Length: 214
Image: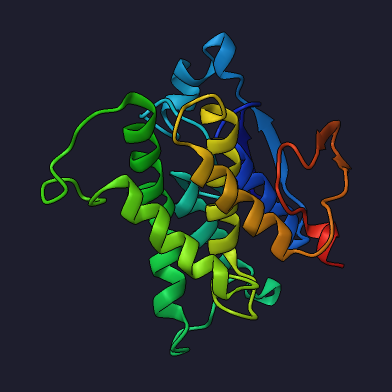
């Protein structure tokens, strides 16, 4: 059984959401970053970056939320969270899957800190372009791959949820809130409370829970 190392109020929720979508049993291992649990030797052996989330699947271990989502989607193809090899939509799936950590997160930091960056030197270009590109994709809907829900929607949706929480008081973040609402609205129904293993996943934690699409 897979073990997902997580902490409240962190990027762990993309992985939690993804695991719920698979419908497969898994073990949650609380790694509370508020207490420094991520710096213990046993956890550093799994993720030497001392960050959450992390995943252990037998002898395999990995970290980085997008990588975890990609790995789990491949491990459980019956959940249909990733286009199969050879499917033309797989190209866009991979693009959006890594758009969140590669473009959205640094763009949010740029907005929050008001750091001026040379768009040629910055890997994400500039923040406004990032949001415009995402806005255009969400406008086509209902999902990033059109009619197909995938792990990319989970990674992007979780990232926007995190942005709304972190930057809700930051001037200029209205575009992020707007995009977040667009993705939530695409589900058509509100996320329901999930309870499993003593932890609640609520709409505040996960924009669109698995049960919302049943």
